[in-house]
Length: 220
Ligand code: AMP
Image (cartoon, rainbow, N blue to C red; front, side):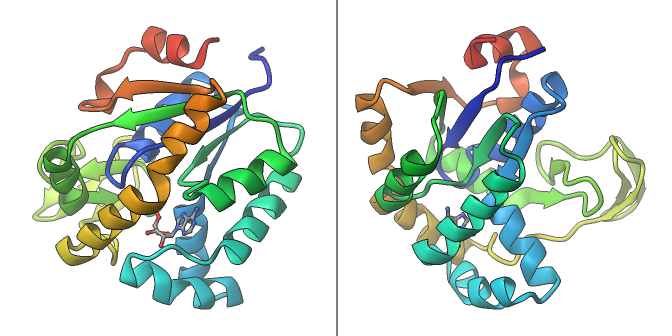
């Protein structure tokens, strides 16, 4: 049994935080993967009050205001209190990081480091199985079984997938999201370095790590 772990994944859009979380979950199946972006998208799909509030910010590539996001995370962490978790996409600014450190302890922050050229390719080619959330890429990682053009069977859950991009995965919104990352989220690198929690991983190829390497990153 793996020791209780509280892990934050930090990195720009397209660094591979979702893919890396997916790999961690294969090694530690009972760890909770909490992606604020996924929670917002689910709420948008279901037209909940939270989704309606978040939609305009997400479509513009801006951060959803802290009071909404912090509250959402607090509720989610309370729901799974007794478990370990990976936070993917939160915190995203110093205010959120300070808020988080008031409500939980943090064991490890993994910074996925990758350059802009790779980010663009990943983001503009990315698509996701709507059933199990496995992440694919039009240029680098297609599902194995193709049915016809832009239509496949998911390698993991076996359901049909049709190529559909996230509405915020356009070049214009990506540039905005990268600006927001540099301005608001990158200062967290220094914040967690000073707390001696940060470890940097070369995320040029997040799928290239073996289970052994991932366990080493996680110190388990
Ligand atoms: P992601 O899936 O992590 O790329 O997030 C998609 C979008 O959701 C971001 O561009 C933001 O608009 C919003 N979002 C996700 N996480 C946060 C957060 N921690 N704080 C504010 N907005 C967020």
